[in-house]
Amino acid sequence: MPINFWKPQDLQEALAQNPNLVLVDVREPHEYAFARIEGSTHIPLRQLPEQYKTLNPDSELVLICHHGVRSLQACQFLEYAGFNKLYNLQGGIDAWSVACDSSVPRY
Image (cartoon, rainbow, N blue to C red):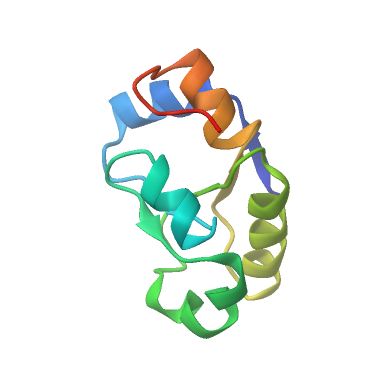
């Protein structure tokens, strides 16, 4: 299954239907501390090769970063590692803040 791309509204709808979606934020610690989607798991992209085995390959995973580039890299890595239910948040946390949750600070 190829990597899926979700707009913020797609993620918002999916979370309403499936609160068990796993959100994986791959930004740096200072970015995550400043702005995040509540309930997300934080695994910085540079740590993903060591920590990806903590994730369930059968779960639906939504990868998040600032604008969608690092999260796409994370999706590609995870796809290579055998994960097949991967979603990249288009526009990242910044687009989420604009479209879905203005309480999440922009930077």
